[in-house]
Length: 137
Image (cartoon, rainbow, N blue to C red; front, top):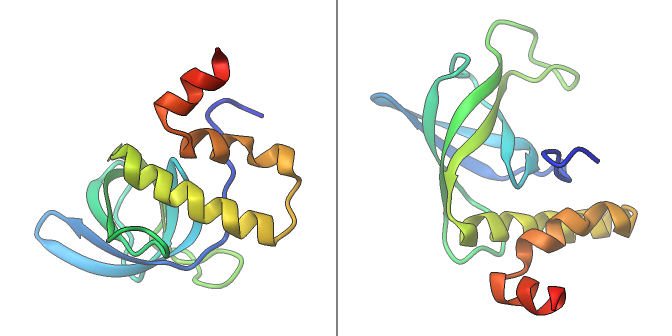
């Protein structure tokens, strides 16, 4: 597995996107600890930066992050194969919020019976620095 590639799951979480002076609602389509694909009516353009508020089930409150658009389907079809929306990578997200995303993804992927070896990246994110240090010792 590429070190920058993380497990991702197809989940539907509500997202509020803030960019410039506008706000819009979206729904996640694919989620990883490093970013999301968001279905929305008017995706932002490539490289635009936005602030996201994500309703992650099980999180202690809403998850907030800043993100950059790395893929956008502004003018293409809007169907199940090519949904209208945008892929974003997180520029800034707290460790706590990234852990909340990883925890929910881990539960989702376990329910889908994904090979446990493919979930190690999510387990690592969920562990605190103290736990990682004690395991290494």
